[in-house]
Image 1 (tube, rainbow, N blue to C red):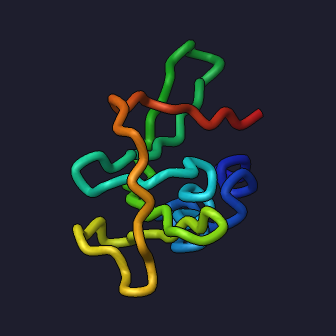
Image 2 (cartoon, rainbow, N blue to C red):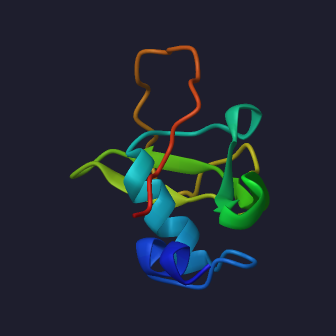
Length: 102
């Protein structure tokens, strides 16, 4: 957990708004509610060769016009904030992404 906390520079269980905002900066795109990304902590237990998965939270983000600003959508609602003109990017099929924490 401490490595995940360091990677997101904030509390991760449950994920704080700061950690979720950092995740938005990491993904660098609009993530609509229907395409929300789930963030898991995955670790391996050495003595039994078992992987453990812990869901940390869901992430939805708006990428706004103006310096590529990324805004957290903490409740994954479908309406962007008034001060955010969402950048419509070419739609691609969502792929799971991994943030590797060494």
